[in-house]
Image (cartoon, rainbow, N blue to C red):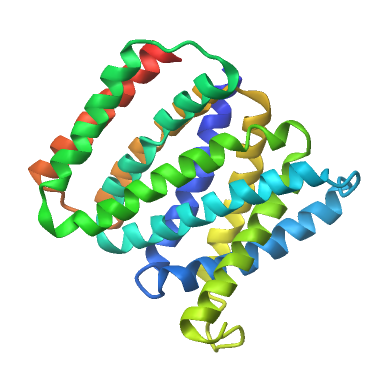
Length: 280
């Protein structure tokens, strides 16, 4: 029951952040959106860290490097997630992203010697079939590629967080991840645009402040989850995002999905439902 309430809290926070990301993705490039958002998240998480009284002890060197490695994967996941939102429907991106729960299961088997349930293979095949059906819709292939990259990198990045977060507190993990994301996108922008445009008028947009605000709270609580719950349970938590995505897509973004898109989405959800019923 505790996992259920954490799931509801984390998914609600990230859902609100994703709504503001979707709105921001219409106005900015993916890299610049992530960069501006990360300016806010570093400031907010830094304030939280300093006020929390948990600055000491500092994370051990090995733990810090593990967090940085996970941060790189998650930064790639965030960038490709925004790129996907710019190209395909919010619902489709969310459903493909939820399939990253399967990666949690695989890593649970590899890292923690959890037993493989035969139903996992059925769930995986259905989910892959759902993505392939959507692949037939030629005008969204690029968006699906970005969504799949995001799902894979986020799946590995967040699941591997369960290792370093056993040895440091959640707010340190959040601060290091956000600082790494800011650094990576700053370098990316510098080498692609030749400037950070840090002082560009109107750059610090209010919608990206809200992205950062809800992201920080969501990141903090999901880091606690990786300290408290197994990877199987954390995979289960991702399914709760689907109802949010459908409601937002229909009411906020006025998205109209084709029959092919719905067929693909429901196959993925059917696979994940089998996974959650039989494997968690």
